[in-house]
Image (tube, rainbow, N blue to C red; front, side):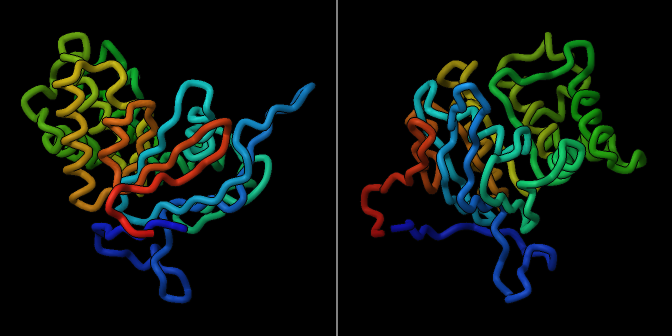
Length: 252
């Protein structure tokens, strides 16, 4: 039985409401499957249904080889599913071509990766600003928005620093600012604390908690139960099968 957990939600825009008046989920898998061609063909993600509603904090946990990377690739529009429908903000993206998926990624999804993926010879401000070049945000407000995003993650005083002069936690905060600056519907995080020490990891998770508290929809993929515990809901993945985990004290 699907768990029902109260969620914090942002004010809903008209585009986020279905014709029936119900709020459209940020992401919805309907029988999504991904099989890599052979020989022999390998089914990396077995047919699954999943709904992530606006304002939720959902974590996906599983060991190495469980299908986490495949799930990330499908959820992040890096790969198209072999079967089923994937609705992102109500748009069925399952059959979209590579160019269309790239455009949708830029508008709807902010990525945070374990390895930061910052340009080492560009300042924190430039790294965040460049994200808006790729999604074609108006040139006139890019710098102001980048400054605001860096200030929001606590790095307003480090905007001119190169990544090589930043700590691991600061680099991850720059990466989060870069993901936020396009104002995505979904913040998709892949092992966001994997390269950080315990104290720094806690500070990054606290920031994700704050962003969720402000209404951001957050989906974190992890192997760490302590990280997964930050979610309102946790989805376990093993052998390409998704299964929602029950929480102690929460009735189904």
